[in-house]
Length: 333
Image 1 (cartoon, rainbow, N blue to C red):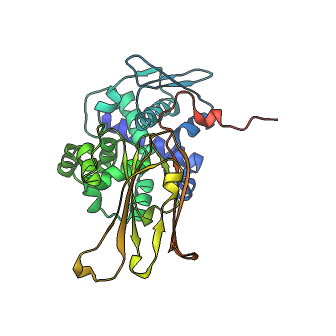
Image 2: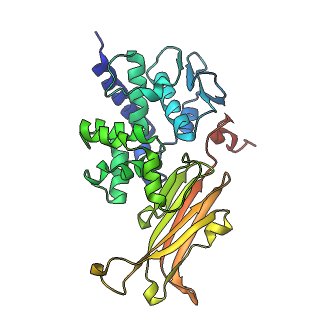
Image 3: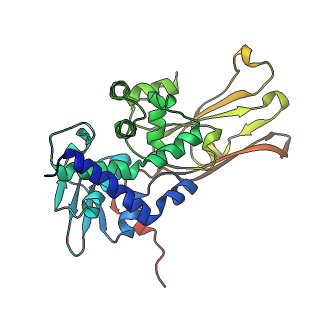
């Protein structure tokens, strides 16, 4: 007779099998490093619609023309997890499912008493959006080891890069054995607001819902999917003593509001006259879409460039109506 463990194993296996079938690992490690869940749903020829749903986060409707409904009343990360959950129902050939806030409150790796179909779909969603190899890819890129991944601030930044909630990311790391149950409890007890406040320092915001991204040289070429009011802290090594400065003016030209820009001198024991940290904090205030390209050069001689930093961003946030992927498809001639 099936039990919770069997459902967790099934959800894990089915997520891995779908990744293999779609050959997503190589694609993700060359691109954004974030599972494009809505594109995958459409690729599998499932109808996908975003609508206001009373009391529900999403629904899966089986049949000859299967469909997935996702609420428009929650942020992008919740829409993504809901989409992955409903995709799990489809891929594992489940019955009709109407899914409420319970998706966010339960944990298939800890909770013991709820529907085995939902255990499997919850597990599928977590393992499909946060496969172990994708976590390892980002950890390697950021130079995080198992110890640094126990730091709430790094768990938070990892969750942003994978497009998931902070607690869902912590649950996946618990599943992979990155940390134990005690550390997991400590991580989830640290509220994202506290992490954001620590990152922003003296800069205060009225609403703590926006994401706060910390970008360094290790994020060169990254692709960011966020919300219209996200905040970015760009921290880059700058060789100002030799006259080389980062030109980050493009942030302003692209519509970002720079709220702080400073140079932080490293401690004396790290040497005198070396590189400083250029730390710029900028905020988006609209659904922006574009690319930032910065150069590390002498202002009087732009041709003498010693480093580049760029990232692509999509800050249109949550979806509504038809998916953007579907709306932006080329029209056949």
